[in-house]
Image (cartoon, rainbow, N blue to C red; front, side, top):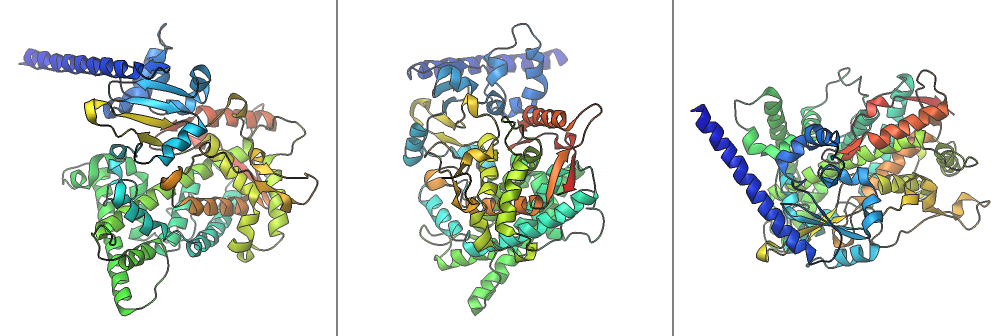
Length: 544
């Protein structure tokens, strides 16, 4: 019996291997027709089973072999693009193709070509199959296309308005102030990533649902008032979003699952119940003509109601579509902004300044913050007047996203005939000499000796900077994330500076270099690009 099972297993593995090699051969023959450089790998880096073991087991094993430093170990794992940087394009040019048994991936690093791809949306649609896992609570902006997507876009875009941005600004300033108070009294700090995620969650709770929470640091979360079931459920969902997206709510509903999975399922039930309650209350308020708080959830419901009968092609969104979009707002806004903040806080402290005469980035933005905000208390900071003037803080965001874009962007040919579909991966537009993190590259000024008021933000060439995507599918929450980031950085760095904790035998310069190397080597793709072990870079905050 055991022998039979073993033979069956070996036979299935052999059949799968043969089929994979056959598909690889067909894809290679198709790829040769493009006349561009090719790199061939025997296992698709988007294979779900391979993603579980690629970088953890097999890639390190092959790298130890004498012949292990080839295409297989260089390209055959999820997130290889960040480690490779611009090197492949430097070797092969603006275009090259990765041939796999699954599909071929065309890597593009040309602003003109990328702009053409973004503009020809019908020829290069979004590969929706890569985003199906986001359909947790219902169809949404990320998982629809064509006329249905246009309806989602029209309704959701109306929710991200200046009124909501003012809420984001005020809440971010308050949260950053309280987070700084926690950091300055709990030195050294090794919970930077955890705490910035809490800040982001609290901002989303306020701007998204009209619920405000006092900031609690990583070591304070078990103290004081227990968070409401809404906040706990949302935190659980965001902390376990990969499990939720892979397994889905139906599978998680099985009774005899591990405690962690049952807890996750209960969180989805609680969170949906809360959304349903808000949905019903808002519908009743609309029917009675009563005004309510203007947050993302209520704005989305009202915009949907005003657009016509839900479910119709030209009508509003259905209840499940509203829930689906709210989940995407929370998932995308929470994780991407939080990870960007975590990178920025570390990079602000440890950026290596190439020109010895140049001031540090922290002093550079502090100068702007004192010029714009003066000595006014945070309660008097104003979104309308202050945010547009904080150009250096915006430059910090732009430069951090340039090097550490959290979300990869891909397109597809959409050609199903003859199994000839291939995906287009948008490469970050980097050059060898611009791998240095230097926010000042984004600032233009006619006269460096004149007032900061003459400074302007550099407008990148179309197609060269796509952190929020480009064209009609540009992220509707772009301004939301910019406001949150700038307000948080302003709250942290006007009156304070941060330094790395010195290890034995180190001076400050050595510590900065060590932590910069940690940021570079310890960054990887989980679901998004993020620092894998930010706790290894403890920080000390000091009053200026």
